[in-house]
Amino acid sequence: MQLNALNSTSNRIFDFICLWILPLGYLLLLCALFFLPGRSVHHKLYYGLFSIPALIALCLRPRLAKELLHEPIVVAVLLFLAWALLSLNWGPENDVPTGQFKPPLHTLMLFVGCYLLVRYRSEIIQPLLFCAATVALIISAYNLYRFGLIYQPEMRLIGVGAFDNPLLSSHVFGFFCTYWLSLSMTCKRRQVLWLSIPAMAIMFATVLATGSRTPLVALTIAALWLCFICRNRRSVLLLASMFIAGAATFALFADKILERGSSFRIELWQLALDRIADHPWIGHGYNAELSLDPGVGYPLSEPHSFALGVLFYVGIIGFLPWLFFLAWSFISSQRHRVQPLFIIASAWLAFGIGAGLTEGGGIISRPKEHWFLLWIPLALIAALSINQRARRLLDRPVKTASPSALQQLTADARIIEEDGLGPKVLRLTDGSFLKLFRRRRWYTSGSFTPYSDRFAVNSVQLRSMGIPTPHILDLYRFEDGSTAVHYSPLPGNTLRQILQGITAPAVRQALVERFGKFMAQLHQQGVYFRSLHLGNVLVLEDGEFGLIDLADLRIYPSSLSPSLRRRNLRHMQRYAEDRHWLFEDHFEALLQGYAVAASKNDVDNLHRQVLAGRTPAQTR
Image (cartoon, rainbow, N blue to C red; front, side, top):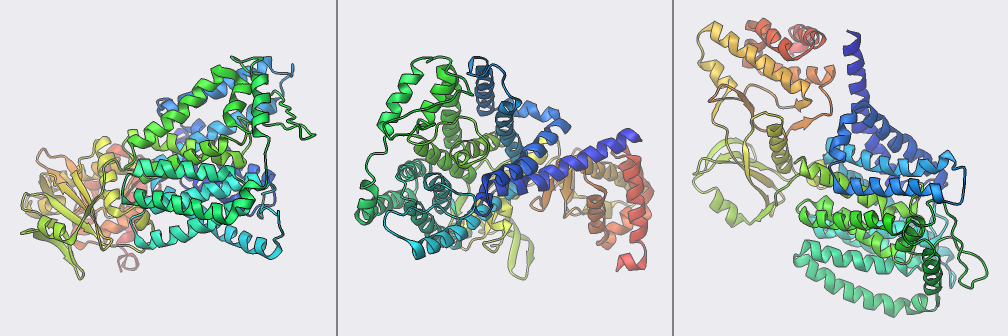
């Protein structure tokens, strides 16, 4: 009994971390710099709401590390961090403070947390990114307004919040400018497109106001990568827009770009290369101090190049895994470009590489602006790659169909289900089914992740769990914003139809008992099917149960909590015929079947819920 209670508690803690804490922590990691008073508060928020919860979740379920260790990016990052820590042995300090071990650990937890977030809340990633970008947009617009009121020649925008340096500020502004640019290349809804274009213009103006030239190069590289990975009509428009915007920017701000003169980058790089030559293979140590004076009268602690920084601190041996995880990230993103999140994350990484050509140098740090150039996009790509390999994300292209193509597809189709707005499910002439999902408001989750996509992903995931589901043939998007999923039906009849045709009570009782076991297995595997009723459960030709109408389904990290099980039961109790068979005539058989796969406590809860549902107050 105590062991079951302990397992239940650990499951609820794990679920709460994955479903609520990590999304909040990730959102604040992305946008909190815009409104926090300093970086130290930002560090604490990341530690408390993302890094430490991710570590606790990994300790609760250490078996999850197996999937992480099968990802080449994660393995390369581990090798890089391990070598960096090993380099402390030949660093300048004999007694290494324990604080040196914290930044690598928090960096690693970013990968763990992103993996858990994508695995268990994949549908919330795009809304989270959009929310963070909207916060950045609103505050950047305020920054521009405030900057315009006090502008004097040679002034450079820094921004409110935790920003204290125009160049570092430009990294984050450019990061979100890249997001809006990526969104304009991948979005399917016109409302989002018309929002992303002016949003991108505002973020680009904010980057220009910082007076930094590095992010302009980085944005150009990110835009070129988007043209390559998307390869559509918008890519041609983007190339033309880049040429026009580049010419206009140079014409309007040539003095601002050129009059700042030399930034001593060449001198810094030469000095850094001289220091690297002292220990080219193993580097000077992760905790070494770098002091370079290019003739400005004071020493600088960064070589203004991420690559040179890696070579200085960890040498060529450390540089190789660093180079590998960057290259593999682009290869993986190109391979899985059907998933828009790969396009966005790889564009961020392209921006970071462009910015890192002439900026930065510290290889492992606490969360700050440099994380937006490397670790944040890299962790997201790694998490997406792991879950794409496990087929938890959409892995097939969505076809755009014209009204004539839809008419041709549905010619002579038989309507299976419809409502006041028209058909919802059609049986096509070849025996396959087409399920239609109408357009959702552009700001809802159904716009970011259409229900047709959820249907397809849920079908694949349930099949991997051993639960029969329809085989997906194609996904469609129509000009009016509606979507559809084309699938092969499962061979069989609904459980409701089977029960209606059974006249022998003993046979019906045996079938209800088997359904009770099936329902318990769903609950134990964390499958929360909101629309679970006897019309959505098929009895297959081999006697097994299968599920249909999968869009309204969610797979939780652990077995369902008592509250979710009660909600599932309440939904089935709404149907008079289902309630009669399951909860009145054959209730004991249902409980016996449920007890095969569920705990006694769960069976007792089900019993109490059904008894409560029989009261007049609950029935109404």
